[in-house]
Image 1 (spheres, rainbow, N blue to C red):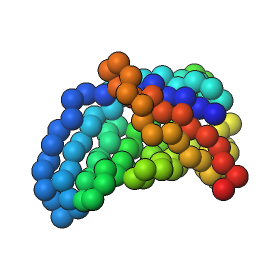
Image 2 (image 1 turned 135 degrees about the vertical axis):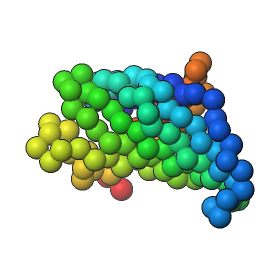
Image 3 (image 1 turned 90 degrees about the vertical axis):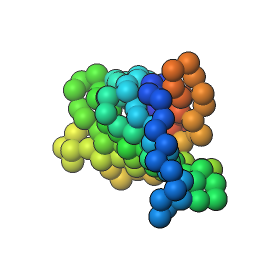
Length: 121
């Protein structure tokens, strides 16, 4: 299990696009704990769309306490499915091939909290 506490900037409404009403929420940082410890780096965002139901498409980076960079993408509508990309020779290479699910974002002061679970499918 991995827990994220993600800090956010105010959202930016794009309005109606070919993919529905779009809302962008900048990711400004945060902390990760559990099986991996480190921080969420500044610069990611959640590119939400709302054709019928809110859909999340968050893309951002983690930096582990030992300096590894992990690319994170958490997507879905209702159920969220995170995917990861990391160097193949990294101690975290298991993220490249694992299957994961995450909780819906829970509101926290200044951002959201998310719990990521490894799944057997």
